[in-house]
Length: 126
Image 1 (cartoon, rainbow, N blue to C red):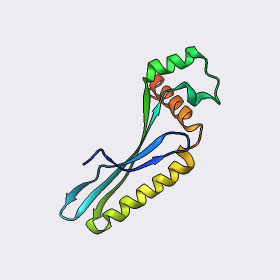
Image 2: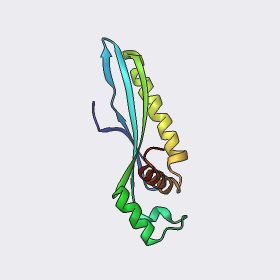
Image 3: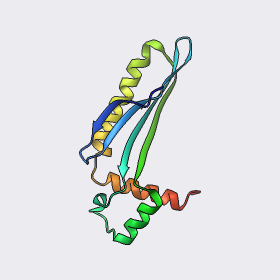
Image 4: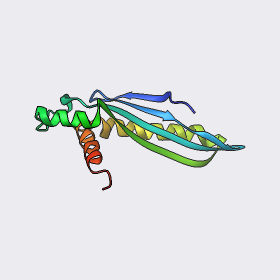
């Protein structure tokens, strides 16, 4: 297993989306396919241009979350044959790339994800 990205896409909002292959062999010719989609979002005031954000609230967010948050999404398939492995990985990465160019690249994605992380940190059991 490697943590090196097999695909890296620069998004229109300045973020970088990476596909990381964590697949492993589980039997003679069978694989567990696991692709992580990761986007590191810096906790920066620049993302909040469309939101009211005073300095005090921004500093509270930064204190609670730190300098960055990481969006992670796991795509997995189990018991994949050796012959299908490459095609399935390619399909997952292609789908992720399409999502990156439509959803993750939106100008509001970083701010909304930061606020989601803040909410999760403040109410961890909801």
